[in-house]
Image 1 (cartoon, one colour):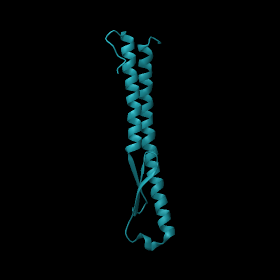
Image 2 (cartoon, helix red, strand yellow):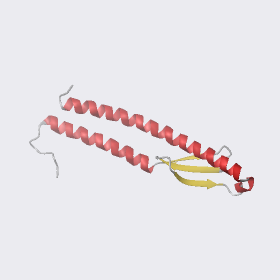
Image 3 (tube, helix red, strand yellow):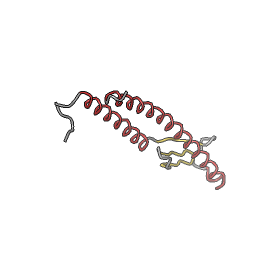
Image 4 (cartoon, helix red, strand yellow):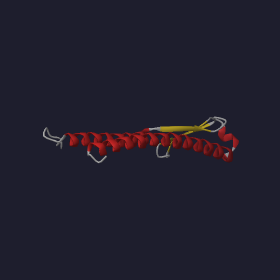
Length: 118
């Protein structure tokens, strides 16, 4: 059921459009965060770790033969790759959030105009 009617005031229609836009921006951000992945490698590129937008590990690749270097070496390289993946995720998400905040600020200003509050 739609709350829009043909008899609505133009400001109400504009406000509803801005609210829909506001909601779409937030839903898009949530979708991106839940579906994007970020991969980091160790310096030697023998280990790759992939994390999602919530920084949960979704994949680990260890090059064949690396285990012969010992558990401590493998642990250090996995941790390095994990840190690099998390740094990449944090940077990308931070940039996306800045864009979302700017878009939401604009939508809020437009909503206030439509409601006659500015």
